Amino acid sequence: MLFFTRARPLFNKTLVSAYNFSTSARQLKDIRNVTVIGAGLMGSGIVQVAAQADYKVTMVDTTEAALENGQKIIGNSIKRVARKKFPEDEAQQQAFIDKALSNISTSTDAVKTIGNTDLVVEAIVENIDAKQALFKSLDAVADKDTIFCTNTSSLPVTKIAEATSPERRQRFAGLHFFNPVPAMKLVEIVRTEAVTDPVYEDLVAFTKKTGKTPVECKDTPGFIVNRLLIPYMMEAFRILERGEASAKDIDTAMKLGAGMPMGPLELSDFVGLDTLKFIVDGWAKEGSLDDAYVKPCAILDELISQGHYGRKSGRGVFDYSK
Ligand code: 3HC
Image 1 (cartoon, helix red, strand yellow):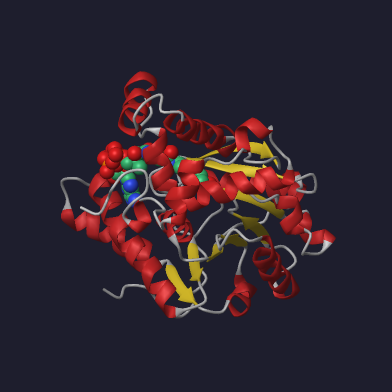
Image 2 (cartoon, rainbow, N blue to C red):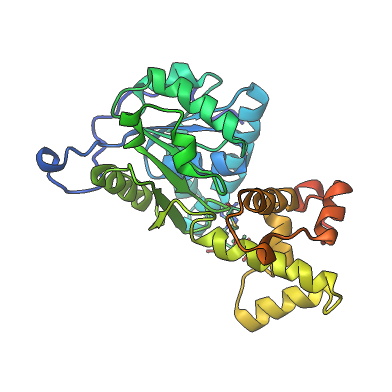
C-alpha cells in the first residue's frame, strides 16, 4: 500500500487561494505548499486534512518507520472519510482517496524540504527545547514569508517563537487541531502579540479550506478548549478518588446528562493519561492556574506509573485490550 509520492510534487498553478482580499493592499501570502513536521497521530491528521483540501503537503519525521506509521494512520482514516463522503459510490471513494494521497510527499529532512514551503505546522513532542531547536534551524533556511505554526497544546507559543528572528515572530502562530483531526471540526488559532493581521487572515483561510472552523485565542495556558477541558477531566479523577461515583457512572452521567460524546474518563484515556498529567504538571510548575485545578491526583499518577497510559497502551482507566 505505497501510495505516497517520494519526490516533492510539482507546483500546481491551478490552485487558487481561498480568499478574496486585495493582495496589493494586504500582501497576503497564498498558501499552497505545506510542511507538517511530526508524523504521529496529530501530525498525520493535519497532513490528511490539508491534502484532502488540495494543498501540497510534505510530511516530515526523523525516521522512515515514523513516516510509515503516519501513512498507515492516514490510509485507515481517509477510507472512513471517503466512505462517509460517497457512501454509495466506491469509484468516487477511490478517486477521492487517490487525489488526496497524490498531494502528499514524505521526507526525513525538515531543513531540506523547507525551501518551497508557505506554511510549516509543527506537531512534534511537547518539549520546548526540541520545538525551539527545530524552529531555529528552520528559520535559518526558510523563505522570509513562510508562516510557522506550532500545534502545541500546552506550551506558550510566544516562548517557542523566541527561537526565531523578530521578523519571523510576526509570522509565528499556534494552530491547534483536535484529536481525531479528520473528525474534529475546530482549530484554535493562537495569536501572539506579534502576529500581523495578514498572517492571521492567511491562517483563517487555510483553516476554513481544510473544512474546519477557526476560533481566535490569545496565548494563554490551554487557550480555550484545554483551559476548560483539562480541569474538567481532572475533576472527574477527583470524584473517582473520593469514591463518590464509579468510573463508568461518571462517564455515563456526562454522556447522558450533558450530551458529551465521551465521558471525561474515556476522553482522558483517548487523549493519553501521560499527556493529561504532562499538561497539568506544566501548569502547576508555571503557576498559571489555581492550585485546586492542578494539584496531583493519586489515581492518575498510579495508573501512569503502571504504564497504563490510556487507549494507546491498551489500558487506562478502562481496559481496551479486547
Ligand atoms: N478519521 C476519520 N473520521 C473519523 C475518525 C478518524 N480517525 N474518527 C471518527 N471519525 C468520524 C467517523 O467517520 C464518524 O463520522 P459520521 O458520524 O459523520 O459518520 C464520526 O467521526 C463519528 O465516529 P464513530 O461513529 O466511529 O464514533 P463515535 O460516534 O464514537 O465518535 C469521536 C468518535 C469523533 C472520537 C467522538 O467520540 C468524539 O467526538 N469524542 C470526543 C473527542 C474529543 O473531545 N477530542 C478532543 C480531545 S482534546 C484534544 O485533542 C486537545 C489536545 O491538545 C489534548
